[in-house]
Image (cartoon, rainbow, N blue to C red; front, side, top):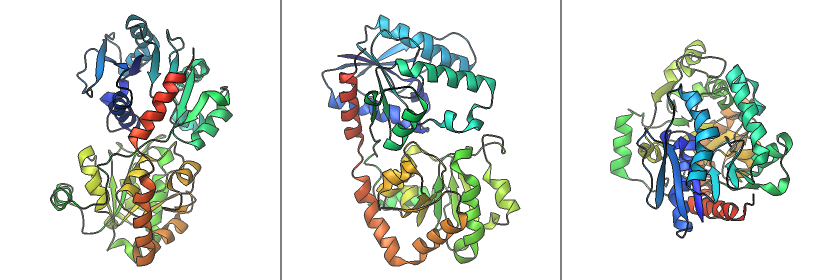
Length: 377
């Protein structure tokens, strides 16, 4: 079978969508070595591709990046699929073309633009969301990351239930609780980490609930702040806006700047050691399609305190402490309990890796391959 895959997000490996695209590509060729797998990529960008896949270089017109992306998805990708004689076209993120020359499979990780108005505040965002929403029912099959996201898709998009399959994501074997003294020390020195800390690693858009993240420490700082400062990792926005929240002004305004430390972007290879060094992982997100950082933290044996939202309830089972996302006081109490109760800490450290072991990229790729094979035009 000849399967062409959109590789647009391979140029953004730090995003969740970029991680997913990279891992799926890496493992699809292993679970289906008899397939011919092509990856459509912009012709002017040198993107690393795993062994066993064929680059299909797509020329793009000179346009602003957002319009280039739209051209790539709606014009260039279907043309490439026809030229390459693809038998299946797989778009591993929510941007299906309106027309495709082969059965189309699209991954809808979540419905954030439909569920949160601030994500479609601009005219261009509203038009783009309307376009992909209109194109989605034309897909032969839709993949999504969780049963929670599948329910959202059934409620919001006009797609028959038999054409939507939830396939959980995986976690790399790099994320392990086994210490690596040399690597762990290197990462600690590189980011100037304190001896003990609570970690947040993720984005700063509104649904990530950065206000509650910091509000937890307005309740908890007297009990744990000096011994367990909050380390916030990720690329910070340039100030707060309708869509993003900069934690630094809030920390100053709320008088917790002494117990909050921002370390900026973290290299992918540094993440396992960063998780392992944490005493707890704090993740108060209001909405997730899956929750990959939570899975990575659990795989590293870090006690997790996170939001009691459908996707995370589904993901963690009994391996994390979940609190409603707007309950900063309750989340502070949960965090303090994890840090001062050795029995609770030990329980979560043991349960996390066991739960995470149920999620592998090889299993994700195997189930994805089955869906691609079964898709009918």
